[in-house]
Each structure stands twice: as structure tokens, then as C-alpha cells.
Image 1 (cartoon, rainbow, N blue to C red):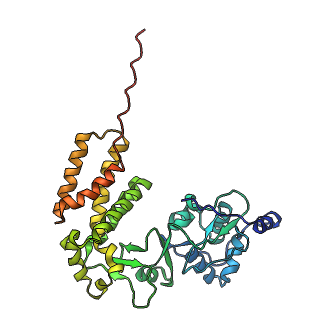
Image 2: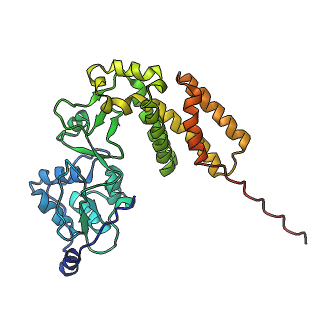
Image 3: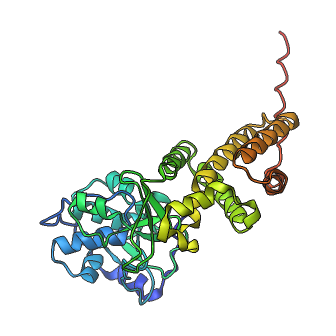
Length: 326
């Protein structure tokens, strides 16, 4: 998702007149990365390490893209940089651009502010497709940093596979990370989802989003809930009473299995090698999976068929005509 920004005339005039000196490395620049951290969270830790006021730190990176743009609260939203501002951050933090982009999702190329001009940043009120999730406290402890750091997530929750914890954006003091020791299948599902998305990229993310939407529909119809969902809920004890909070956790393993099945069909469909007979066979396999979950097969497959109709079979490519003989 490109971070397209609306330019203000005042900010544009400021960028034209301001002369930028080369960025300098900060006195204390080696700050441990927290994988998946938001840009605002990382820069706040870096600014605090060097006792630089946070607003001043961002104005060292560039100027606001919009007229009247201000630095936001890293606990509530995230900021975005253009390429020039990213390069200044790389110098200040003594980190290669590639390292920053690997560790911080909102610095990746498709999320940079558009434009190749002087360094600018933007801090929109609504960061579409980005939610802040409190970092795992054990990860923060390992990195020797504050547990007030936040991850940039594509959902309102995340999983720390290293420490087996379910993370979300609840800010209440009692809403701590949920220990998944008794639910190892949730942690394993997260690892499998990451493998799927690493292998297929945007396609893998799309397939999980579709599977997650289907599973959430089944969750909202109690008659379609498999027994294992309620069993997991009981294992969570008191935390399991908060239905809105734990719903994604409870159906996560099945959503990932379904995403793998959808991805298998989608790969063959896009290669134009999926026939009608093979598609019917795929649907039969999906039915076996649903039956294994002890869900009403006919009702669940109705929703799967709706998904399949929206991803119709493609005609096979024509074979090239043979070249005429000499």
C-alpha cells in the first residue's frame, strides 16, 4: 500500500527554501531492533536514548508533507517517511537502509511517502492497514527496552511465536498479553501463516485475509462453531470471557489451514492449469477438512463456494502453432 499523501502549499514552499545539511550519526545510535516495530515507536526509543525531544527528532528527519502537519503520538498512530528522510534516518541511526526496512514494516518501499524530492514525513490520523499492537514484554526485556514499544500490525492483534504470547492493542492495565502455553496450535498456526506469506507474498496475505473473513463469519453463527473453539475458550479461563478480544485467537488455527487450501487452489487457477474436475475434487477435500473440524459441512461449503465463484477458472493458454518446416 503506497502511502500517498496530500501536499500543502506551505509545506511545499518550506521544502523548496530549506537547505538540508548532510545527516550526522547520533552519539548513541546502536539501538536493538524489535522486529515489526512501528516507525514512531522505534524513533521515540532512539530519540529518548539521545535525550532529543521527540518533535525535534522528526524535524531532523525532514519537514511535514502537509500544511500544518504535526508529529503524532506513537502510542496512537504511526508516521511515514519518503526516501530522502529514510536515508537521513539510516545515517542518524547508523543502520543500513535495508536493515531498517527489514525490521520496520512502515519503512518498506511500498509504504514510503511518494516523491523523490527533499526529505519529508507525514503523520496521518488514519493509518489505513496499520494497527498498533503492544510489543511482547518479554521481547522488550530481552532487548533491554521499554515494554511501551509498539508493533505495526496488519490486524488489531499479533502473536509472539518466540515467547508464545497473544498480543493486541488493548491499553488497559489488566489487558496483558495472553499466554499461549496451553494452546501451542495457535503459535504453530502463526508460524505456518508467516511461511505462507513469505512464500507467496501479497498473494499469501490475500488468501489469509479471505480465510480469516470466512472463519469470522462462522464464528458469528454459533451453530457453525466447531467444538474445539469453545474448548480453547475454556482453556483461557478469565481471558476467554472477553469474546471480542479472543475470537481471532480461537479460530486462528482453522483460518490458517483454510488459507493454505485457498492458496493451493489459487496457485493452480492463476497458472491456468485447474480444470473443472480438479476444482470439484478440491471442493471435496475442503469438505473433508470441514468435517474433520466437526462443523456442518453443507452450510460451511456454501460460503466456500461463494469465494470460489469470485475466483473463477481461467481458460487454458493456447499452445503456440508449430513453425512451418523449411
